Image 1 (tube, rainbow, N blue to C red):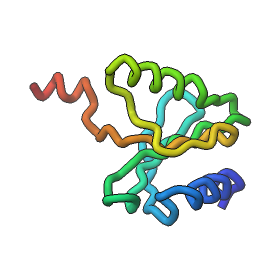
Image 2: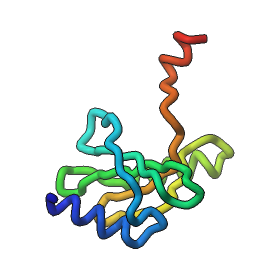
Image 3: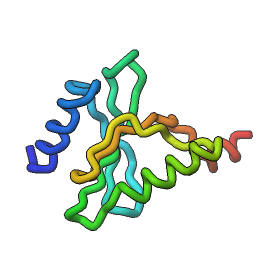
Image 4: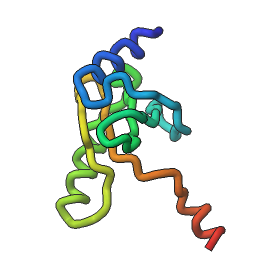
Length: 106
């Protein structure tokens, strides 16, 4: 286990997703990584965003945009738990439907 894995486990221990099954998801072009967590409240999956500050990541802009979108009545993933200093968020899982694939299918 890496030190970062220990930070993630410590964060999760203080949430409703302590002990949840973790499965890695495809990342993006940043230093962030994502995991789907299964085994929390109601069995509904959520997404862990791991945005390490030591690698130049900052979750505050993501939080600000998500909160602004929601305040405007627009869709944004709900932030269910956060540790801003460690760059960790638990987000509503919006599923696997990728816009380009939906357009191709329909």
